[in-house]
Length: 146
Length: 294
Image (cartoon, rainbow over the protein chains, first blue to last red):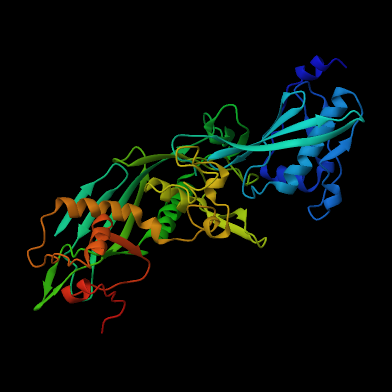
């Protein structure tokens, strides 16, 4: 697939209720990410927080752009489940591709949206690895948030 | 004396008429909130509303407010938030303002911090703040709210974080929000990760250690003396604008007292969370704190 085709699928949005988030984080096997083009990418099996082996920061991926982006999203979902403590929020509201190897995950909280930006690196052997995770915050509403 | 000062965020009433040998002056901050219903479009019983009122954000199912549900929600909000903030702080009056006589003895009051929350429909009367409120469908358990957009679950205790021992940190969002309406910021502003001139809404601003996270201005429900700042600010105004007491003026400091006096002039009122009784001049000048008086 032409890399530019992958860039065309720039926006991956997952609007999830809080219950759906809990389910998504606890049981990725039941979760699905619907792309802007309407295709559906099913996420990987459940990853227990206590199972460090399941919390991989890299994994071998097929070379197609669709498969690679699926790999990256699975990696970032695992990482969110392992590292993000937004216990009271509204779940994942969007996963957006910023470029071929960078995705931003939006996690709405009261008065703000936490954004985790994941940068990935592609290894010659086909492995995809998380290169960095950068947290930031998007303000919502007027003045000081909740 | 009963004197009211009007501030943009609240009204402040200082009452020294209640003072006697055992009772301090009372400073009551009154916050008037106007609540406005957000209902499904038209006459529909159910509908949707976007998180944060932002058309690009996810929608949640909402249902129409009924008169009884609306009245009940407002009553619960006002009653519980007022109870949380009312009567929790005393301000130590270091410079002996507002002295009075009780019998033959002069007393110098400390300040009991009271709080009154008045909530009514936004179209009735005047308010310091107007708040929109959605009523969530029973199938929803979360809504993206902010400082002027609440939801019907905001008075519930929900998990906001996790402490270092893995224990949930619970908070009722509306008491945190009332703190903001009084002018309080998040607990960790000024600390690494939350610069005062940066985004004070970042997750680090809610605390990165257990102590901060458990604060009501973090993710928890704990009140701390620093949360008395709105009352301190109001008292500084009263002290600056009211005429000095006719019965007591603190004596000039000695050389050794000078550093402490300079501190007291910078911070004439400091907050504690236990009742401290009015003091005699001798007790004040000796910096005695009177927590029991028979």
